[in-house]
Amino acid sequence: MLFKLLVTLVKYFFLSDGWSVGRVWELGGLWNETAWRRKPQIDRLNICIWENGEKLWLYRVEDEILMVEVKPTESVESSSIGQVVLKRLITADQAIDLIGSNVEF
Image 1 (tube, rainbow, N blue to C red):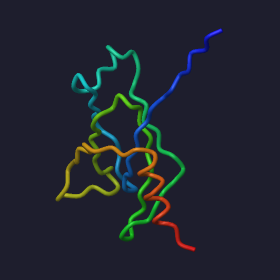
Image 2 (cartoon, one colour; image 1 turned 30 degrees about the vertical axis):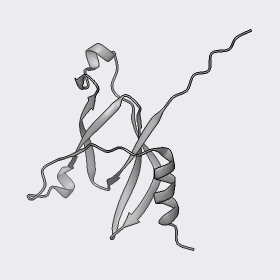
Image 3 (cartoon, rainbow, N blue to C red; image 1 turned 180 degrees about the horizontal axis):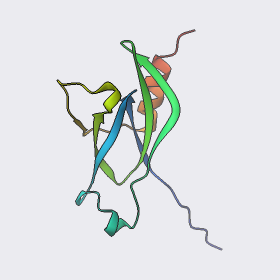
């Protein structure tokens, strides 16, 4: 008997508290919910780190996602920064390294 092994690859990024996800890009361009028949999988995990006095939440995204636009929510609206596009998402190993280097004993 042959069993099919399903491997789900994921990527990660850290996002400052008070920022939200906007547009999402995949290989063909902007994520098209009609073509994919679903929204992109983007989950905020219950893991955060503190860096320079800011709380950064860890997000998990599916492998098909190449870039993510992030922007401040109304509660932290900044006149100097309107939006940012994250072009370099990180691997699980890189996320673990960042979390591990942020732990205080």
